[in-house]
Length: 491
Image (cartoon, rainbow, N blue to C red):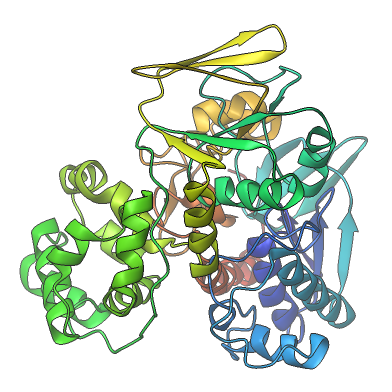
């Protein structure tokens, strides 16, 4: 009997899952049904957009092919004749082209049905049997992968719906271009992360007369990408973690990880404590400091980057007290080191700061909408701007996200999924099987990407999303095949 698998959403996570099932089709009678309304293969981040928006990772880390780590680099050479691109930051829209090409090759190999509709509901019929509902249609399947991508954007100041407020900025080119032709003197960007930098790059290129005000709580950008060096990890590795757990139990103290990180730095000739305290500040002065120590910074960032594969393992081995301590004391700065900006972007920031084309503000208190403009209340002044662009990023709390997402609301309401205290939903790790308070562990209902961010800490890198799909699909297959022997049992 032919088995049917549903993939809901086809961004990077969905494309990775599709890749694994296409490989499985060579040995199994399997139909893959893909549900997505738009941006097939690219998701929100890599859709067609302005070329000033760059990947924050180098090309050598962005391959979709788990067998060939330089797959994207090879594609750039063969398709666009861009040579020696391993260490370069390529425009996001070009990476989107690579993903679409990758999707087209998969389509030629597999038995795939595309449903260009938004999924509205999901019903559990029996063991390893589900009904996926769309407008005017429903589909029975044996396994589902929830690859729904980013949650809806946050709206921390209640501005959604105001004409001069751009709530979700992507694609930047179409969302922002109409306002840039108007008589705009001041634009505020809420947030200072990589999305905020995308907006800055596009606005500064398109209309140099607009003064950009960054408003946030800490008034700082992320760190500058140093001269990355990858070396073997001697302390922070799976073997050390496994040996410690075998000797002392299921949990590893946060202080032990800090000690291993310090030793990792020593073995690579850097003082982690000095780097942590003095680099990655994200202010103009902090950016200048980063440029003075690009080699040391690159070694540290190289260590952090190589932790991608074991970050979920580390997170799983911490007690909740240690998790809370990490988030409170180190989480913000850790993210700045882990998601650095390209050096080219950092140089642009310094250039724009020098002539006051951009200004950073911290400790934002409130924003009031007055007529056709905004009043931003800061500790010592009031700032007035004509437009505000939201760059705070997506929600992580599913209880807040569900208010803008009817499908997520339905899943939570029917207790098919449960809120995870650190973000996203509860899943069994590393299988990524959804945990339901009503149905227990659902071995053929898998969640990916931001949906499992609370369990799989730091899983926003392309490599981790791709590799985790391998484990999830392999695990789901065990239960799909088991059904052939046992038959479907009612829950």
